[in-house]
Structures are given as C-alpha cells and as structure tokens.
Image (tube, rainbow, N blue to C red; front, top):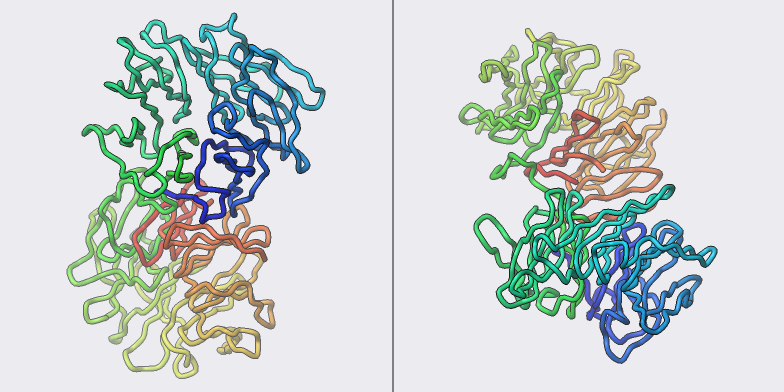
Length: 596
C-alpha cells in the first residue's frame, strides 16, 4: 500500500521537506538547498525552479507550494508571498518587519494567506486584500499553521483550531473550537481526517504533548506522549497513525501496531498531508511516500475466499450471483451467502457466461466433473438445492448463453463427434433448434450470440461462424481483416455493431470486413458497454476501457493504471455483469476484487 518517490524516480533530490496537493491531484515537493521543486502530475515528475536556494532549510523558507486551478503555483518564502507564473517567480507581497507570514494556498482565482495575527484573502487580479479573521475576533490566539484542501482550510492557533470553508459565491464559513475546556494549548501541525475531522498536535496538562482530534463530538485527546512531540492522522484503514520520534505505529483495538520503517520511511519525516483520510503523503529526508488503499480490494464480507471467480450476473430480484469454482456466491443487499456445489463438481472457470437465470426463477450454473464431464445444474434459492439438467441422447452441454426471446441457448455435443446441437432451454426442458456438424470445423465452441436482426454468431477457439439464411458462413478469416487465431468473445453494441475478441486483439465488424480496435489484450474474456458510453474490456492481463478515443488499462499485477491514446464500481475481472444502482461488475479467473 506504499508508493515511494526518490531521486531515481526523477525528483530533483530525495531529500523532501514539504509537499502540497494542488489542482488535478498534482503534488508539489520542495526539497533541501537545491534550485528546483519536483511536481508529480500523475504521469511522471516535472521539475520547477524554486524561488530561492537557502543555506539552511526550515519551515520559513521551505513551506508548502501549491498549484492552483489557473496554473499558478503559490508559496511563502522568507515571509514573502510569491507566485510562479509564465516561467518565473514574482513577489506579490513583502511582509513588513514584526509580522510573520506563515502559509498560503490558492482556491479558485484567489489565495488564502495565513499571518501570525490574521487570516486574509488575496485577489491577484486586482492586488487587493480582504481580512477574514484576526487575532482579536477568534479564540485561537496567535495563528501557528494551516493545511489546505480547497475549498476547506484548517488553521491551528495557540489556543484552538478552526475551519474556513470558502465558497465560490457567498460569504466564507468559519467554525472554531477552543482548547481551554480540555486543558489544551499550543496547537500545531493540523492534518485533515475523514468526515470533516481534524488532527493536530497540542500541549496537554502537565506539559506533555498530545495528538488531538476535533470532530462533531468536540475536541478529544487521541494519544498523549510520555516525553515526545507526536503527530497523528487518520489512515485509509480507519486507524489513527502516530509518528513519535523514530517510531511510527497505528493505534488499534489491540494496542500499538508498529509500522516497519524501511526505504523512504527510514529517514526523518518533515511533512504529512492527508487526502481526507482516504490516503496520506509523507515528505522526509529519504524521499516522498504515499499510503493509500490498493486499487484491487477484496469485497467486504468475502474474507478468506481465495478461489477463481469467473462469472457474474444480477437476477430479477436484484440479487448478485457469482460462479466461484467450489461455490455459487450470492449477494443480497450487503449479505453474502456461499452455496457449496455438489461433491466432485466445480464451476467451469474458462466460461464467463456459465451463470444465467432460468425462466423458472432458478439459477443455472455450468460445471465440470473431475473427469471433465460437462454438467448443467439448476440452483433453487428457496430450498438451497442443486438439480442436474440432463440433455438427451448422451450429449453433454458444453456451452450456454442468454436468449433474446426468453430462456437460454445451450450447445450440446457428443464426445469425439464434430460439431454441436444448439438447443433452447425454457426452464422445463430442452428443445433442439439447429444442428451443426462437420461444417462447424473451428474447434471448441466458446461464444454464442443472437443478434437483434436474428443472426446467430458463434465463436470458437480456432475461428467462428455466422448462421443466416439457413446456412453457415465463416467471416473470421484474414481476407476479411480478422487476423486473430480465435473468436473467444462476441458482443453486439446497441447500434448493431458486432465486436469480437480473440487471443490478442479486439475487432469490430463493419458489415463486410473487420477493423482492428486494440491489440495486446491477451485473451479477451468479456465486453460491456456501460450506461455512460464507455466500452469495458476484460482480458487475462487486466480490465481496459475505451472512452473518448482513449484506452485506459487497469492492470492486475500491481493494481496499476496505464493510459494509451487512440470508474467502474465492483470488479472480479474477466466477465462483466450489470449490478444495481448503475454499477458494473466484472469477474475473472482469479479471486474477486473491488476497484474503488
């Protein structure tokens, strides 16, 4: 859950004193006695000239620098308000002797500036100031620090804490709390938490330093140090993190849980910035670190399940069902149920449409026996029992797929006999529809789709076929632009466009030929057009989406994101199924995960 940045990642140097999160999620890092800042823009590291090169480094000359929405970067250097614009730094305000300028951060076209005795708003367009608060009309006393996550600004003072909410139009909203009743003073180092909470360092009774928390419940001490000056913040796991001297640990129900300080964490930590409790950043002598939730997460309630999950769908009652090798999983609301398959059977993990609702309200699941015999089961949610569906004439149901006019398609075959018989299952029995024998000729069947114009398309491990006008033709050939060796997945778009995914590539059917849409996918498993017009593609090397002409890849090895020119709710990766409330689910031949 850690990600580190150092000199080797392109930063000006590893030593990092402060960091500020700005527009678009950018992170501006100020280092030691060097002439450049480092900016993480989501794609790489960009170096930005610093305003000065000090002999020594401290909060007075190396405070946070923050990028604004208009592309300007604001910071405070030696008590002066400075802005970086059009490739150069300019002084916008020079603080007179006796007054300390502590911090500045942009919000929209304006800048919120904290002095030791006042909080003011600066308008760069007109060069004008507006006083928001001063030492005389708050209970905070002298101001000490500010952390910003526009439009919210959190301020600490000698006697309390405050929050300023800046609206684009309308009067700023101010709230504050005094530490006098709780016996707290000398507040510093504010760090935002979740649900509007704020953590800070403060002096408690007896002179000991404490981590305090301000929330809707008021002001409370979270941790009191026996002899140190601790800093605290909320982690994405919900626990409170404490940095105390050389110790880094989490406060849990079982007590202190130490955090290993290796890599970037092995050095001194100078700055802490929280993304409202969802993730946090650390800047220190050995580099910059970010701690956040993994891109892929096990859904809550499925702890300990480590089995391939390869198919998913939503039934008419809004329940979600998943084929999970040894189990049929059911999710009703927030409640998970695991239905164990009969002994000796497992779900067919290479087929993503092996889970379909029967017209009789039961759940049909495709299975394999230990001897690789194909078995089709119906699960009754009311009784919790599985019942086999037996095809006639000693056939085995090798594939099933939904049918537009009701029921489902099943493909039944006889071992060592070419071709298959396409049948209709109506919840009561099987009715033969089409026999394809030697004319099929492209290996095991992998996909069946019934188009809106009545055509039947078939995909196989070595090609595919199209049945219309009483005959079968083979459009999956190189002469028509289909350069892949198989047609593993078929999908019809709302406008009637046919898509086909093979072992490596995704193609679109123009009506007379194929057009290559994307390569390098490694066995396309499932396709889905979401309600927002984004095309999602699940394959063996991750989940991919096509939006606005751009491909965005969600790789599974490291939970990485890659964008190539040309969020999704819950994922189990490989087959998509529609879920409630506009979410989409996907399953793959690996345990199920959630993509935030």
